[in-house]
Image (tube, rainbow, N blue to C red):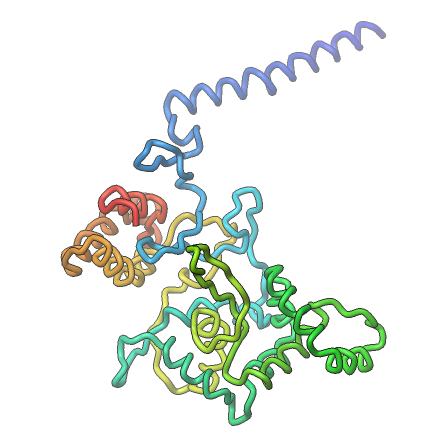
Amino acid sequence: MMRYISKSVLLLFLAVVICCGIYPGVVWAIGHIFFPAKAEGSLLKGPDGQVVGSKLIAQPFTKDEYFWPRPSAASYDGSASTSSAIAASNYALRDRVARQLGPIVKYQSGPKAGQLVAPDVEQWFQQDHFQGAPGIVAQWADMHNELATAWVNADPTHGAYVDAWAKAHPDTVAQWIKSNPSTPQPKAADLAVVFFENFSKENPGRFPSAVTHTGADGKSTTAIEPVKDGSDVQSIFFDMWRQDHPDVALQNVPGDFVTTSASGLDPDITLESAEFQLDRVASKWAADTKRDPATVRAEIEQILQKNASAPFDGLAGEKLVNVLEVNLELRDRYGAP
């Protein structure tokens, strides 16, 4: 009996040594000797020599001087890789894509060919009519209750704004409670739809949005205020504008510019997507450096072409560009934006 037990213990010991010690050690040694950069996570360093990220994981860029990555359902969190898992039938998917298109899509033809649609979305919004009926914001909240609720929950300042509105409109809140007796003490999110309905009546052609003011002391304060233009109007109401203007021809946008990857962390964009952003990036760097826009554009185009490559050394797929690598090269060439 002891003989079998001793052999089993010896086998277990050898398995632990080989599988948990020798094998990982050999793999670690091979990786660090022959593939040191990949073994360390394919890390990239900034101009100051400090690590700024990995070429394998996307990170957000929002400044106009930089190329932007694909949208991320994981909020670019390397520890929370995930897809959006939103079905094509789910309006939330259409809404997310529409919000990305609003500020950047352009006319394809006609007298405004090549111009942004965003200013016309703002002008249409200010007229406060959708499909012939008044109250765009109220209609938006009525059609998409979940989006109205999501707006309230998106930021603590939004909830506080609705709470302040509720205190200033006790009769409206009381009527809502009467219609919803199961919620005698509604929270801000519960009142989202009725809040937007009331807001739309009191502020036609306006939407509650964060506005930053600089005081006499130089300090900045941000508060929610009714606005008639800006990125919120351009993005949130682009889809409704599009429904009111179905025959307007708009430029195509690269698919990966508005769709998330399966991981939510794809570090690459297609060369087509990079070229789509080239005018914005080049014009911004030209303004920052006070150089000829055409020259700067040609330089950045060369950077893109140099960094673009298709998978498997060009044997499959279309050319891709690593966003972090390209943006670091822009930083090296032109300095901090």
